[in-house]
Length: 234
Image (cartoon, rainbow, N blue to C red; front, side):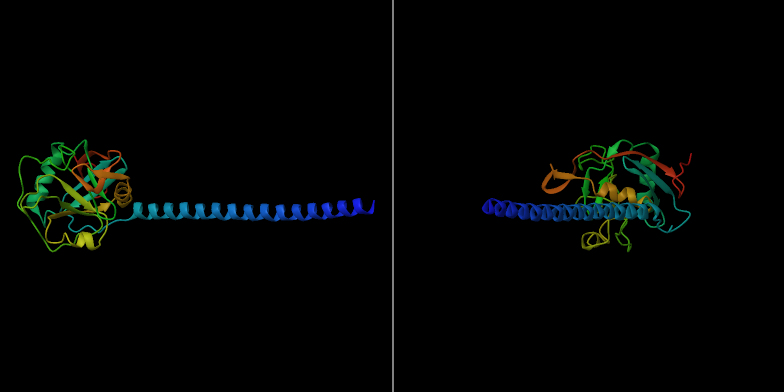
């Protein structure tokens, strides 16, 4: 009887200890999950704050007499000032193509995170043009976040209708200075720019070493002449 009682006592002590450990582990797991939830909430909050900040961001207007255009995309609208006082021939070409609906329904066919988004090609491949080419209008302006510049081939005077908008000022965009025609600047819609710049991309079929083709097409639905607030001008 004593042996049986002793065995029961040991079992009882073990059970109490096990229950205590289980409670501690459950509390630990609960605290760990709360920390994860807190971190996730904080991360989401930071992302929302960053998006709100970009949505509210405005770039100073260079010259009020310059024209403005607004690009309607799958991710929202972007309003840009066109620098006619810097690159008049390029700006007039872009305005002419805008007014005749040339850019409507095209895609941003080339996107490189932290570098730029490129569009304006009627073929959507990077191989198209408007049937004519423009003489380079290089300037001392820097390629920075929101800079609107003309894409071209090796010949400095080979720009036509394709354009790109820079995502940042870094070594990659600095290398473009004085080599590509800057003809405008994003003044409103920085959140939209960066949403497009962050889309998932796959290898470019025309340059497999470059991951730059959006996995899902990003459309430039419409471009129209506007005021600085994005209101369409008739």
